[in-house]
Image (cartoon, rainbow, N blue to C red; front, side):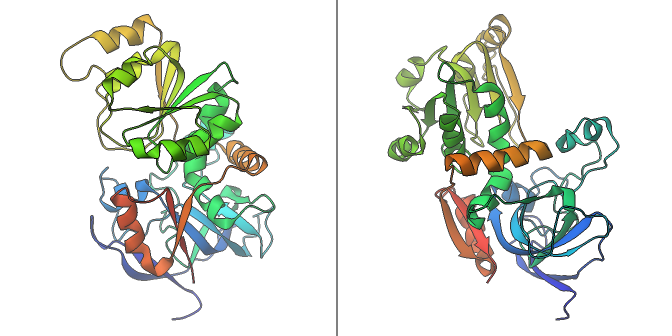
Length: 347
C-alpha cells in the first residue's frame, strides 16, 4: 500500500457489514487540511446512513463523523492550523461561504452543504480525512480525545438549544431518552443551572441519570407518573429515536414551552397521536407551544461548546474499541447496548 493510500471501512451496499476499503488520498485544496485519524465515535446516524434510511447516500459508504486526529498537512490558505495539532471534526466538513446563512455565520444551515457532511466523499472510519480547515477545531488543553470525539456530534446537537433556552434554576428541563445524546444533555442542562428531569423507559437508568446531574427521574412508560408532570416543563429535549408518545410530551409542557428534537430518525411526527383526537394540537395552539429541531451548531457554537464542556467537566461515558472492530461497535450501537457511546481507536 503506497503512502498516498487511505485505509478505511465501508459498507458495500445498504445494510451490509463494513469491509476494508482503500482509496487514493486526494490533493489538498487551498482551504483544506489533512488529518491522521486517531479516534472516531460511532453515532446512530451512522447506522441510519449504513442502512440508507433516508435514501440519500451513495455506496460504498465510508461513515464516521465524530473525528479526532492530528494535522499532517495544510493547504496554502488553511490558516490557524500547524502540522501536529490535535483537532476535532464533526458532521460538517465544508460550506459554500456565499449563501445568506454562511454570510450570517450560521454555516451549519448552508444551502449547499452536502447531505452527508464529512462523508464527502469519505468519513472518519479510516486512517485519515481531508476537510476544510475552518471546520477542524483545536481541542481545549487537557481534553481527552475520546471525550472530544463524542462532543463533535452528540455535544453540538444538544448544547445550542440548552444554552438558548435553559435559563437557570427557574427553568424546568426534561431530557427524553437517556442514551448517547441524553446522558450528555443532562450534564449540560445541570451545568447551566436548570432543574433537570430525566425521562426514560428504562427504570434501571435512574441511578446513572442522577449521577449525570438529573434532579428528578420519571419512567416515561408509567402513565400515572407522566400524568404527574402534566404542564411541568419549560423545555423538553427529545433524544429518543422512536416509540414516542408525542401527545403526552406536548401535554407535559407549560404554556409557551418548547419541544426540541435532536435525534435523527426516519419515523414521522404524529402530534395528534394518530387517533383523530385533537387534544394535543389544541394544546399546541392554545398554550403557544413550539416544536423545533437542533442538528448542528455554527462554528462559534462548536468552539463555545468545547470550552464549556472542559470548564464544567462534562464527559461522555465511552467504551473504546479498536478501529478493526468497527462492525462490533456498530452492532452495540444498533442494538442499543452501548453505555453510552462507542469510540473507535486507530491502532
